[in-house]
Length: 248
Ligand SMILES: Nc1ncnc2c1ncn2[C@@H]1O[C@H](COP(=O)(O)OP(=O)(O)OP(=O)(O)O)[C@@H](O)[C@H]1O
Ligand SMILES: [Mg+2]
Image 1 (tube, rainbow, N blue to C red):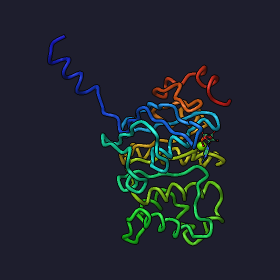
Image 2 (spheres, rainbow, N blue to C red; image 1 turned 180 degrees about the vertical axis):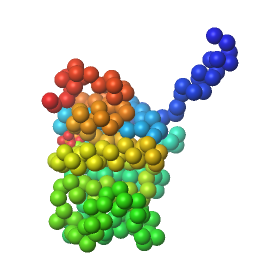
Image 3 (cartoon, protein in one colour; image 1 turned 90 degrees about the horizontal axis):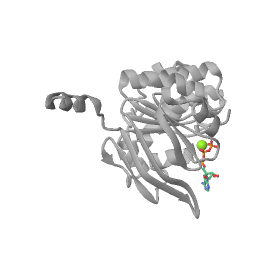
Image 4 (cartoon, protein in one colour; image 1 turned 90 degrees about the vertical axis):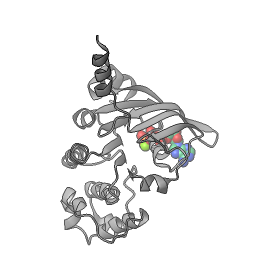
């Protein structure tokens, strides 16, 4: 092989990861929950973290968005060291977070829920981006309804909409399809795929449904007892991994 050919191959074959985690450790008090995690996510891709209940998936996401601080390890986002940034600094740098269980404000209207999120992120030019209502038309129809009066699927759309009002570059979602009807699950899958393919976002989610992962994700990582035990492109997610590490 000539020198030129190998240089060319190097240029086209390597992309720097959008998210790079190394040696990440975390404990709740004396109880260690994350044991030296290694994780990478390619830019403009969807990655899914899978694993049984209580293995540490939410704790991993909370460390990524800065709601918990790790005792060891490094988190690089877009090549920048984010390990010691506070949650609001990470939000200002373009991370949007949709927590498990939605956690919208039940007594505020849909519109107020969205406005509060914009104010919290200091994006208070007052108007909710039209793209959020275009993405989730039901939020437009229900602007004046209280969050607590929406169905589970509508609340999940509100929770995602609340993260989108800040126009994130990196969206982190914790089990967005948990307890949601199949038609809304499909819609959420199509929405996140479009955010990546058309707007260049990078998305990481915790997801239990293998079918959803296969259909919408680019890569997967399986966690067991605070360690990643399998990772790869979604085509590499095989039956034995599923049987060994996931509830079926
Ligand atoms: N605030 C907390 N204080 C102490 N222990 C906690 C706390 N939150 C979680 N844990 C424990 O840490 C471990 C990992 O919890 P985590 O919520 O990250 O798991 P998970 O994989 O997201 O689970 P699930 O599938 O049920 O959402 C569990 O043993 C849990 O009981
Ligand atoms: Mg969880």
